[in-house]
Amino acid sequence: MKRRKFISALSAATVLPALLDGFSFKAFAASPLLRALASSAVNDHVLVLIQLNGGNDGLNTVIPLDQYSNLSSARNNILIPSAQVLSLNGTALTGLHPSMTGIQQLYNSGKVNIVQGVSYPSPNFSHFRATDIWLTASDSAQVLPSGWAGRYLDYEYPNFPTGYPNATMPDPLALEIGSMISLAFQGPMAGMGMTITDPTNFYNLINGIQDPAPNTNYGKELTYIRQVSQQSQAYSTVITTAANNITQQSPSYPSPGTNSLADQLKIVARLVAGGLQTKIYMVNLGGFDTHSAQVDASGTTSGKHANLLSQLSEAIAAFMDDLTFLNVANRVVGMTFSEFGRRIISNASTGTDHGAGAPMILFGDQVQSGLVGTNPVIPSVATVSDNVAMQYDFRSVYASVLNEWFCVPQPDLNQIMLQNFQLLPLIQSNACVTGIHELNQKAGENLVWNDPNPFTSSTYITFKSKGGHVLLQVFNAEGRLIKTIVDGEYAAGTHKIWYENEGHPAGLYYLRLQNEALQQVKNMIVVR
Image (cartoon, rainbow, N blue to C red; front, side, top):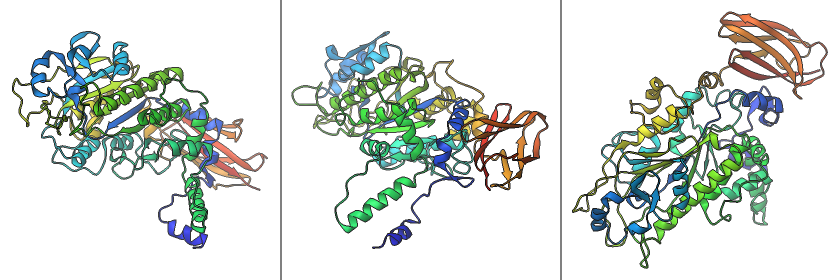
């Protein structure tokens, strides 16, 4: 097959490099000036979502010691011995699985919040449907086409993808490490995120390495397709740049390939510290559907579930240590979730079946540490249908994070969450940074432009003012100020000014508008 036929076949599916006024995004992303302008006006809070696929057994994760006698009757073939339960500061009633020493240390250091009994009314026990409910934040009987995080990002950056990337938000809004973009990142009109296939793919991207292809004609064409695909990803440059900004990370991570969650979180830490302004990351750890062999025959503290919780705890602890090492720990909050919990009573296969309520774990330097809620009540005689009762709707947790971490005003939460959910004390009260939302709202809107563009000697510059002080400047590609065109008070509305080049050489220039807190940068091109 000829190369042009490959291109023709791929044309409907391939995303061409983003262009800004005729210049590729690479030129835009590489500008130190634009990077500096963007970083000066950003709410740098980051949320990391850890999806525990399969339905985590909450009762063997966060153990209700005050219910231990009844719990022993309900699940005597899988229950952790009370003497081996990890203690938590401030309570003798609740402890952690013995594999979770990393999370225990973080909790006792004031960096973990545990929300008890999280579920929703009329829970669904199908993996697929329950996962959709958690990702979209729908009611049990409601099907939504958009995800809760996608609706937030659409609220924060309402014109996306039109007008992006730009100086206010030059980076992907959301990133997931996985083969498919999560439904959580689907906005009302467009997908709001992108994926990094896996850790190997990530390191190949930043090092310019491609997976080997067969030494055949088809292999050569496959190599070419991979090259086109990589070149056509508009954000690959900024991801690579951010990754390459970090040359050393904490040694706390386990050896590569031994803990998939740790491998994913190591990438997230590198990108956050490297300057990527992505707001939400999603990582995954699977295997929690423990219908059988949840524990080893040799003892309940080892086995499938113990290994999973060990990976989770080890990965989060290493990630937190790395964030501190990289001086970005105050910027990141993480949160675990799973599509459901497990039943109170264990089954005859030393496992647990699909259930309802389970704990969610939030972690970070700025979480409000402690336990939210009380231990679940375990009946003295449990049946196979008994579930952990719901204490908190998972959508209250989402709404609280949006309000307390991303500073979404409470009246606006209904637009995102579609209902009014009560807020929980999850994030420290001084964590929220206000005054940024308007910048993000205007990011995809044209506030300044010039016509004609490109131009030779002169052009009209049009800008919008919301009223107040306006500063309009021209910089060259190296970041040197060429001219201040406007510096004064302008009434609300659209204004037009004639600009003459005054002999500057052909090339790329940046037109910068600042109107009070709002700022925007656009390309101007001088030709001869």
